[in-house]
Length: 174
Image (cartoon, rainbow, N blue to C red; front, side, top):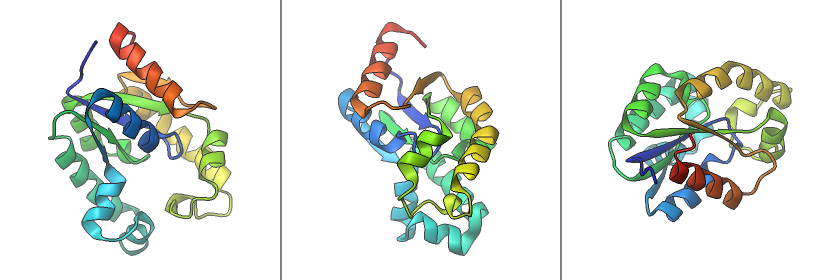
């Protein structure tokens, strides 16, 4: 089995990065980290509040520092925020310090998973479904570029996705 030093999960909101990451880390005996949770821990406020007071640019600056700090650890599974890949330094950190897995799902699946979540500042818009489609159009090429492996989470349970990742790591099927 390939045992990457670190595994970094990228993908859109609602793809399952945190849920899958937590279970994957447990199954590998790694520590789980979540960049959004770490930002909340450091600031003492939720992501929506960071966006409200600092805007997306302020949030991205905080996210960049958190990813830089967390990527220095060993034996972690890190769930990144959906837009983390937009910053070139983040992509470089992830590629240099671990194995990047893009968890893919459609904007329709994202909407089904996030529509009731009020802690999604980018979806605070007239047409959140269209916003998800627009974000996917912009970000998907970047997710694919940085990824060492792409795994679909579309209409799948957490354990199924974790088993696929483990199987592919073990068989070098990247």
